[in-house]
Each structure stands twice: as structure tokens, then as C-alpha cells.
Amino acid sequence: MIMLALLTKFLAREAELVVISAKGQALETVPRPKGRLLVFPGSFDPLHEGHTKLAEAALDATKQRDAEEPSLLYEISLKNADKGVIDVKQAEERLLQFKKANAAVALTRRALYVEKSQLFGPCDFVMGADTASRVLDAKYYGGVEGLAEALDTLRSRGCGFVVAGRLGEQSFVDAHEALASAPDSHRDMFLEIPDFRVDISSTELRERARSRK
Image (cartoon, rainbow, N blue to C red; front, side):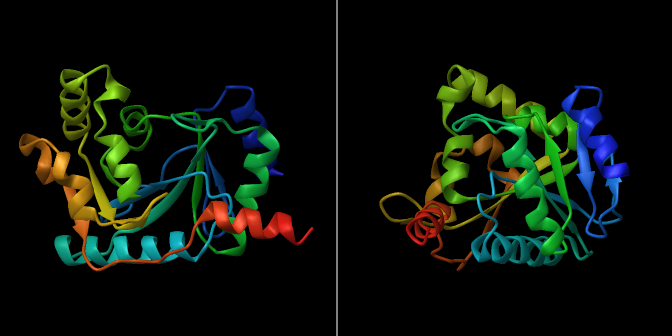
């Protein structure tokens, strides 16, 4: 009932986000752990082993860097810079996956990382190399100066990135390759996860599911 009430507030734009904890509690604020907060944005259509393995690898890499236990929060945005708007029914279906996986997830309307940082505050965003390439693509910021300004804003809010290799449309892209275009002045914001690879595609999984119907 509490979850339904918060979802109703969110859909009526009376709440900025809804967080469903790993225990199934519905919150309208982001839990602040003692260790570093990792936020893993995605469409998660569906949530699969590639996502969960990346989450585990990001937690391990961050723990090694900081020498303290981090926590992870998945995030689904109703808006996506590349994929457009996710409708409410889709969002509800995807939220149920995290309950089964015993994982925490947030539902927001923030498409860009600068926008997300306003909600989540100090955190590291977890992503594959393909997403990192888009984060560093100046076209999303109106040019190179806009990209630098966005990264400056993220840094001022205590945000960074944890990046792993990812199977792209054509071939596998490792984190180091994806981050080659990162400005030297902001390279320290990106933590690479070396030797990570899980070749699972959400698109392929959806196509398999459709073929079985």
C-alpha cells in the first residue's frame, strides 16, 4: 500500500523519485550508506546476469579503492537520452525484477547524469564502456565546452564513474578504450574495472523471448 501511494505521488509529479529497498520498503529519499553509494542506471529490459555481474564487479572495485563497504542502487529513468520515454506499465514490470533479485532500485525522471547527480548527490555511476562513450560524447552537451562544464558540475557534486568493458553492437569495447576520449583534466573521475566481460545482450534476450511466443 505504501509503495502504491508513493508511486502515485511520483506519477503525479509530487515526488522526485521512488526508491524500493532490497527489503521491499518504499522511500522517497535516497538512503545514505556509510560507504560509497554506487548508482547503476539502465533500462533493465530485462535485468540479466550481465547487469548483476557488473554490479558485483563495481562493488568489489570500489571496495578495493576506498577500503570500505559500498552499496549499490539500480536506477530506472522514465526518460532516456537515447531511448525516449519509458511508459508507466513498463516501469512497473521492470521494478518487479528487482524484488525477485533482492536488490534496491530507484525510479526517476532524470535522463542525463548531471540531472541524476542532483537527486543522488555524492556517488559513482556504474556503466558499461558503451555508455561511457556516450557520456563522453560532446553532442549531448552542445559541444566540447558543454561536456567540460557538465563534468565540472558532476565533480563539484562529488560524483564519478565506474566503467567496465561491454559488448557493443559490433564488437567488445573495453573500459580503457572507451575512456581514451576522456579529458585529461577529468580522467581521475573514472574508475576502470579491468578484465570484466559478460557477453549478454538485452536485445538478444528480448528477441529470444519473442521467438518463444
